[in-house]
Image (cartoon, rainbow, N blue to C red; front, side, top):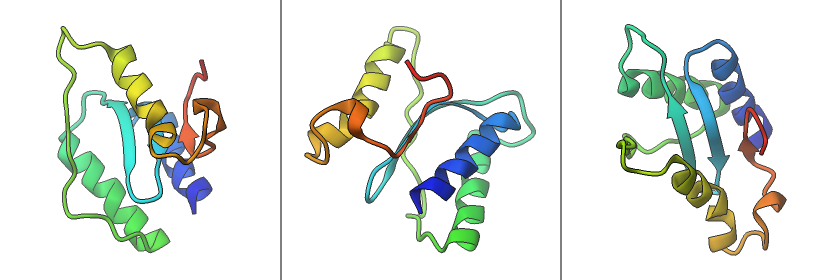
Length: 109
């Protein structure tokens, strides 16, 4: 299921629905660092439409809402990215960040 779900992220990235800096799948949740181009849809609407589509097509049962944190000018993008990428290590799923396969990085670092 991880591959097809990440494919939906990549497709929306390629179609400029969003820019996925990082999209990381965990066994029971996702972490994403996204930017959004100007659109008629709000951030909430864009994510909700994606969740609705993946729920119907893939049978995923998402929680009703999601937690959004907007980076402020004094917050470090790199710090947030490192936090997201290290989540599988903190949870004991892998011993090194590079071992986690369920991540979309458009420009691997």
